[in-house]
Amino acid sequence: MKIALPSRQNKIDDHFGHCEYFTVFKINDKKEIIGQETVESPAGCGCKSNIATTLADRGVTVMLAGNMGQGAVNVLKNAGIEVVRGCSGVVEEVALNWLSGTLSDSGDPCNSHDHGHECNH
Image 1: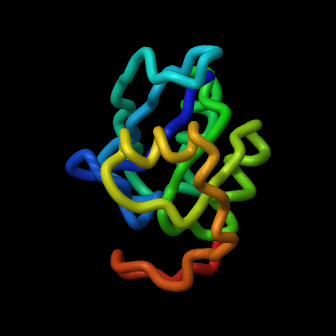
Image 2 (image 1 turned 180 degrees about the vertical axis):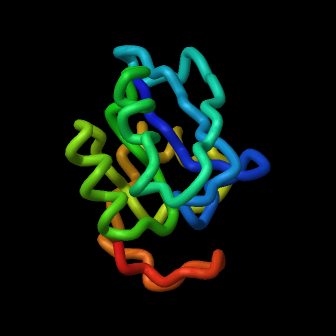
């Protein structure tokens, strides 16, 4: 199994669509992290990029994110990627918390962007 986290400086980026890169962790059957890779973030808005397909093609089935608009959630779910919103902190700690079962989706959609456009995906 693989999980992806929108990242900036080794922490969850608060805005999925404009993150610096994605941290992808490979997880074994014992729910342990056994590998890590970085996937470059595409230019442009997350829900309108090819990132969902790119991550799904790499075997990602879960996205642990901070804020995310409903359009991005829909695109990821259509690619077979479960979305957990409301995450924050160091990416490895967030991944370990999810693996231990202490994280769940906040259900909060992104209400504003810091990058010059409104959430209207």
